[in-house]
Length: 459
Image (tube, rainbow, N blue to C red; front, side, top):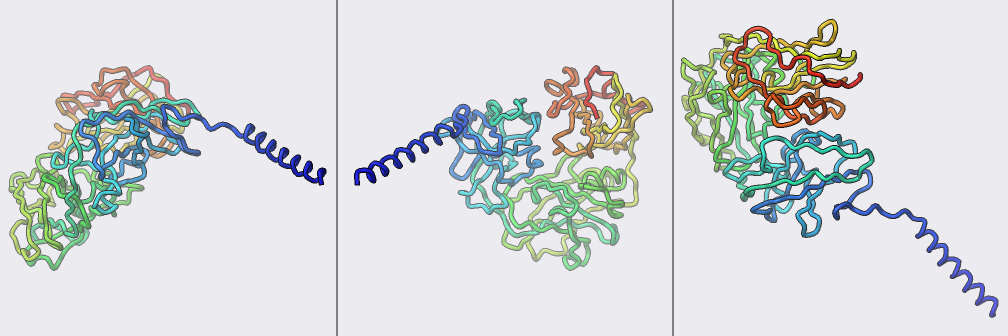
C-alpha cells in the first residue's frame, strides 16, 4: 500500500515538474511598446491624438490612404484606444511600406444610426464639422526596422468634431440636356458626394438615360441609395458626346477624359466643382441639377440656378446647352525631366501631377535614358489652374518596374524632402512631398528638374 502511495506521489511530482519545465521553455510574449498591443502576422501603427472636442459614442477615428486606396466608407482601419490614454492604434498588413501616405479621418462607427455603407472614413464639409486631422499635407508612415511589430507614427491633432448624421435616402440625381445634342453612343457621368467621388467607369457615377422623364429634354440620372445631407454637396458632370473610345486598361473616368481631351466636356462652376444643397427629400423624389449654360460660356462654366424638384415636375425647361460639335482650343505642352545618370532598363518613369490629372503618365526616354519627356494637351481654359497657377503646379516623378499605381509598394517617388515649394532638397523615396514649380508660359519645352544628383534604384 505504501509503495502504491509513493508511486502516485512520484507521478504527481513528475507531472508538475514537466509543466514547470514547459512553462519555462515557452517563449515570453514581446512586451508592447508604450502599452500598444501587437498581433501575430500584423504590424501595429499607433499615434498620440490631441482632439479639442473629442469623439462621441457614434464616431471613431479611421485611417484612409494608400493601404485602402483612399476608399471612403472602409471600416477596415478603425482605431482602437489604449485604455484611457491618448494613444490610439490600428493593426496593418506587415507588407506595409514606409512612406505610404494617409490621412486620419473621423467617421461614423457601428453604434451610429447610419447604414454600413455610410460608416467609416468620412470627408465632410463645414455643415458636419471638419473630419480630418489638422495640417494640409498627407501624412506618411515613418521609416521602421525590418521585423518591427509596432511603429510610432507621432502626434495627430483634430479641431472640431463630426456632427450627427442626417441621412437622405433613395432618390435620383438628374441632369437634362436639350434634345438632339447627344447621340446613342454618348456617355454621361454625374460625379460628386452622391457617389463618394467614385471614378470607376462602371461605378455609381455612370448615368442612365431616362427616356420617360420628359417629352422635351434628354434626361440622365444616377440613383442614390443613401447619403448624408450636406449644405454644399459638390458635384460635376462629365460628358463624352461620342462615347469613351478605345478601352484603357484599369482606366477610370479621368483616364478616359484625358484621352478625349478637347472632345469630352467637364461641366462645372468656372473650373471648380459645383455645389448644391441636399438637405431633405421625400422618398423616391429626385434632385434635378436645374441650371442653364449661357451661349457664350457653353460648357466652359456653369451659371448655377439650383432647385430640388419633386417627382411630378417633369417638363421643366432646364436643359444644358452644349455645343458638342465644337472642339475646345487646347495647347500642347512638352514637359522634361533630366537625370545625371541613365535610368536602368526595365524601369518606367512616370509623371503624376496636376498637369495630367494625377493618373501617372509614362514619359518617353531618350536614347541614353537620361532625359524623359511627356507631351500633353491642356485645354486653354484650364491652363491657369493646371499649369500656370500663381502658387505653382504640384507634381511628383515616380519610378517603378510595374504599371503605375498609387498602391504599388515597390514604386519610388521623386519629390521634395520638405514642403512642396520646389526649392527643397530632392528626396528619392516613397512618400516624398510634391514638387511645387511655377511656370509663366506654356511655350517650348518646360523643364521640371534638370540633372539632379539623385541615386536611382536598380532595375
